[in-house]
Length: 273
Image (tube, rainbow, N blue to C red; front, top):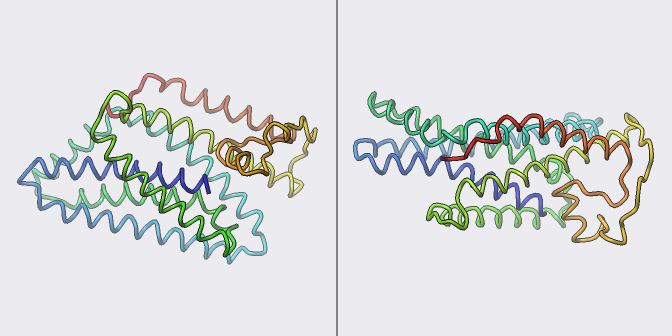
C-alpha cells in the first residue's frame, strides 16, 4: 500500500505541475482564455488514455494467463526502466520546463490554435497516468478482494496528498521549493525502481533463469524483518531484503552504478529554475 500511495502522490503532482503551468499562463493572458476549454479537454483525454492502457494491460494479462509469471516479470522490469527514464528526463528537461511550455503556448496564441494546449495537457496527464498504471500493475494484479479496497483507498489518499502538496508548493517558501521537492522524490523514485528490479530478479530466480549463488548472504530479520509491517514498507520502497541472495545484491549494486553513470552528467541541472 505504501507503493500505491507514493506513486499516485508523485505522479499526480507532476501532472498537476504541467497543467498548472498551462492554466496559469492562460489565466494571465486574457486573449488566451478560450484555450481553457482545450486545456481541460486534454486532461479528460489524458485520463481516458491512461484508463485504456489499464484495460489493455489487464486484458493482455488474461490472454497470457498461461505465462502469468513471465508477463508480470516483464511489467516489473519495464516499470523499473520507466522510473529511471523519468528521472533522467526531468534532469534533462526540468530546468527549462516552464520556459519551454510557455514559449510553445505563446506560439499557439499567435496562431489562435489551441489544439496544442489540448495535446500538451493530454500528454502530461496521459503520461503520468500511464506510468502510474505500469508501476502499480503488479501490485494491483496480485490484490485480493480483501486488499483491493485498501489499495484503492491508498490511491485516493495519495491523490489528496498530491493536491495539498501542490498548493503548498505553489505558495513557495524556503522550506520546500519545487527544486527541493523533485530532488527528494527523485531519490525516492530511484529506490523504488531498485525495489522493482529486486522483485524482478527474485522472479527470475523462481523461474530458474538465474542462480542464487549464495542464499542467503546474511540474515537481518532480527533488526528489520521484511515480512513485518514496517519491514514490508521499507522492502516495497527500497528493495531491502532481510535474507538476500548474492545475485540480488550484485544486481542491486549494478543498478546503482548504472544510475550514477547515467545521471552524473546532469548533476548541475536545476528543476524549474
